[in-house]
Length: 188
Image (cartoon, rainbow, N blue to C red; front, side, top):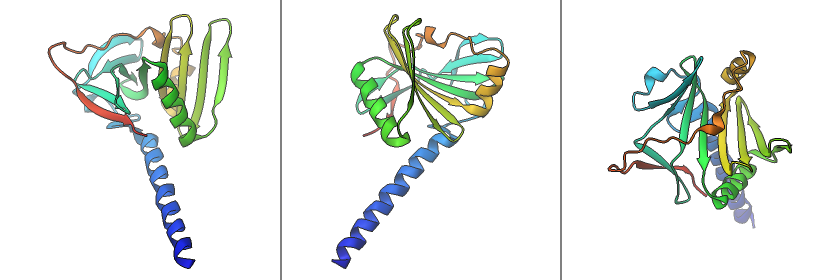
């Protein structure tokens, strides 16, 4: 009986710390990209669009996967040259549901904001200095997952640049003759 309790405790301990370590990765950045880090550290990124102090980039040589679903639309936002956001376009309802479920398991129950006027739904989680938003635009039929680094995104908001229309992004410059490297984004 005692062995059984010890085994349960060890399994719980391992799962608990594995979850904490995965979540803490987001605290420092997204994959290999570190929050607040200068764009000069990422030579593989290609500039897509600039408005005032905000520039958006993508890496045409990388693509991400979510349980074998390809996620090709990943955009990195830099404010005054430092990483403040990551936007991930979602193409299927199945992927959206998987991400929503995964985030609930990892970060708890979210807040939800529904705008009847704009037909937008935003599901939001907070984790330390990171705000995570799962957004749907019913009119444009678009879905996306966004991660914001709070210290920089608040500076951006205070300068009234938040009106940048990040929902208009639909440009991922993959060369049709090259297959991008697939990197697991979330695994279940």
